[in-house]
Image (cartoon, rainbow, N blue to C red; front, side):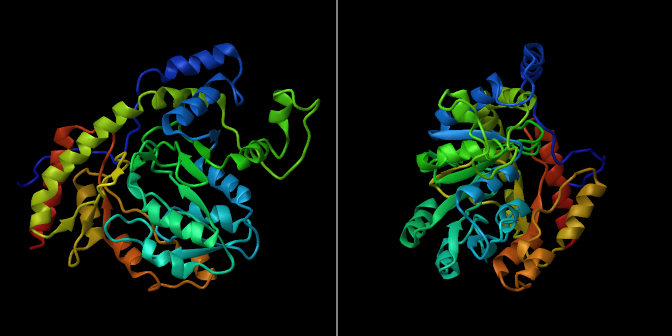
Length: 385
């Protein structure tokens, strides 16, 4: 099929469920727009009850949640934290800002998650934690990650920025490590513009998590009537979100399963349309292990060797399709180089990073949009052969 007319297909468009304005209006009418009001508490309660997590604290961003997790983990100068290089900068920077060194590990070529078989070799006497990143809403191999962590006495901190409402063996991502971080950034499945949450599964860390989130004060104890006045008792920062953001988010969270169902259908449709290109060995599709239930956060393809990823992306954009690449591996960044890493250290990560193309994927993407995207890709590949 030759693409004739250009059709504009954006890369992403946030989905609006319909009750956001009602909830935001209620916040404004009530007059409490700063933080930790009715809607923030409802969001936390919904996430705790839905995902079986003892404590969920809403934050201004996933970055803020990871920074809180790093403090709670006791990370400091000279420590090391095991994580993949194929991730967003916040995964590493949250720990580096406290003086730790990221101990990067290569990824599995099927899931693009951290390669569990390589974790143990990265562990030293300085290692403080393992940070698995659940890429594209597909869980890491948490059984073996937790086994390695127990063997070495390490904390597991899930970077579940892309994993809200996804599962591993019936357990929700964010409930599997001592700590975890969610994102509600505008590009995620459930959004409030900018936002995040810290999941605390180790109950011994809950009280300190509240203190760190409230600028290092014992304000929560004051609000519970446990102390006469609240004061500065620990390190911390202002890790609380706006109540307006929480109101917007609640509307989204109340529709989590409906959103998942729509995205699952979009994922299945892409797979069906792209299968001929897989059969012709132009590309590979994402893999979801049988013990994982994805939230279908994004859709990517890995183009096979011999085709230029940049040319494909440009061809799609020339035809109105806003496809894009994803992470530049952290180990080849300027900061990564400052830790002694260099190109060639993690070959799977580097190969995947050069082959991956993210296709337009959002809740109200239309079937005819998907057909156009795939037809345009087909035209590109056939023009190269």
